[in-house]
Structures are given as structure tokens and as C-alpha cells.
Image 1 (cartoon, rainbow, N blue to C red):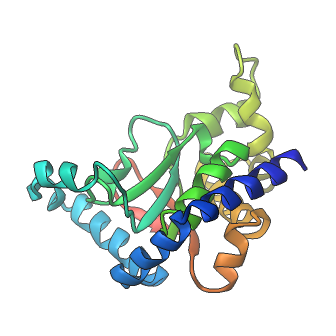
Image 2: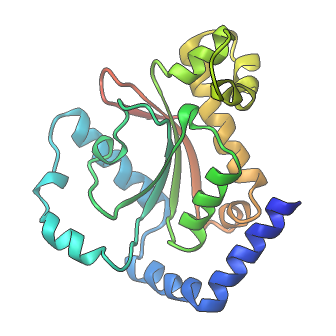
Length: 218
């Protein structure tokens, strides 16, 4: 309940300062639908997989200057914190294009949900991709259930549903987890769920093959 109240207070404060209103104008300006945002991501991934990147050709100096005071990303991606998953590169996007949240196992918790709600409600992203990846260490650890140091085991509870329903295979569990986390975001977030229902936001699960570089929608 405390988390819910804090989110409402956070969004109310943003509305009071007029930030949401300004963002609404930016959404109209970019004219991008959720499906168009997804297409843009997947087109970028196809370029990445074929070693045909275009984002590196853009003028980074101008991009930095343009994004000093504001950001207008068209999509958000929740990915694993694994160093083999460089989100902007995977989708051939550059500074200011993708709002990225990263955590081991691409799981959702209060902080991740709050971050993604900010991306959707304030920044106006149209597409939210929850992306698992091949050989995910967090999923492997949850499947093995071996003792681990520190707070690493705190990840396991978030992965239990995927472990229980996927039949024990690593790849199957990784994909199942991405779908579960995406569904939880779409159904339980009091900010994101209405946006999905109204067609303002699309939430999609995906799987990244670290060997081929290809992202597959689930």
C-alpha cells in the first residue's frame, strides 16, 4: 500500500509541475504508434545482426547537445544487467532513443516498475520490451538453487514462477520468465495497465540470442 501511495504522489507531483502536459505535446510531435515503435526496434536489431549499424554514423556532438535538457525516447527496454546485452547496440539506436532499465534476470520489483512507469507516463515511450537473453546467469542460478553469497539469492523469488512452469530447460525458462515479467507489468502496474488498455503503450516479451545477435519476439 505504501508503494502504491508513493507512486500516486510521485505522478501527482509531476502533473502539478506541468511535466506530463509537456510530454503529451512531445508524443503528438513524434507521431509514433506503439506498433511503429516496435518496428523501429526490430529493424535496428536486424541491422545489428547483419553488422550494418547506422547509429554510429549520427553526429554524437549534436545528439549530446540536443539531450542535455530533455529526453524523448520512443521505447523502453527492461533487460538483464549481463554485460553481453548492450541494449542500444542490439537495436542500433543512439543517445536519447531508448529508456533502459537493467537488473539481473530482467525481473520486476518496485524500483524497476517505478522506473518504467516514469518512462511511459512522463517520457512518453510507446513500446516497452522485456528482454531475456541466452545463457542468463541469474536464471541458471535459480534453476540450480545452490547457496550463493550476499543478496544474490534475493533474485530467486522473482524467477520461481518461470522455473516452476518451464520444465527445467534453461532457454525455455529464460523465455518463460520474460513473458511472465511482461505480463505482470501489463496487468499489475496501475500506471502501465491503463495505458496498455487504451492502446497508448505496448508491452512485449522478447529473447536475445547472444550468439547470433537476433532478437525474437515471444
